[in-house]
Length: 226
Image (tube, rainbow, N blue to C red; front, top):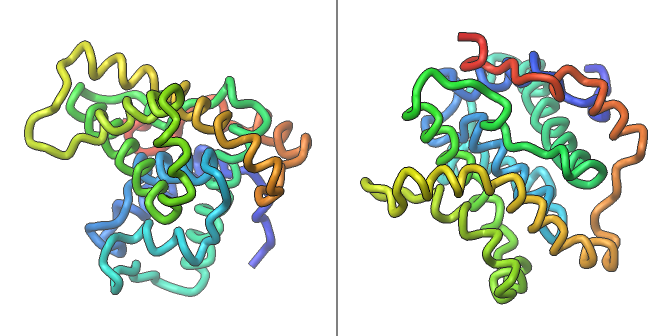
């Protein structure tokens, strides 16, 4: 297998990843691409890194025995490489060009409102799942009144009740606040990351690669092709 783990993931490759996550090879409890995007945003914006052996099982679902049925070793290596590169891309954007950061659902078109609501809700759920493995480490953010407001839209959008806790206007406000919420959370933890040195900063070249990549121009995942 070629070592391309430092190569930014492209929009076309995200389409491949989405196809796999929606296939019969993956447990029904596994994340879809929107949830994965929110999950990686949490990992990238949080206080310290989480190793793949800790975050990968969360992608497949809450059950300990959850795992995809890969057709081959090559397929397994390809999918895992795509996920690692996708996570690195999200981290690179937030670290080097945070003002350009947008969640996946803001880079895609939708056929109707219900499809968009599902995508946004799944993204928010993915972000909250990304907090859980390091919840104690995240505690200072929960205790900081001024920055805790950055998490509020994410909790409201991730509402799993049968009826939404917010009306249409509030939902739109929360949806539009997601990108800045992620940036605010990332800024909150930046001094901590710099002090501990636990997160390795991407290089300037990484940022240039991301800017040149077609993923930065448009979303090429399944729903955008319809």
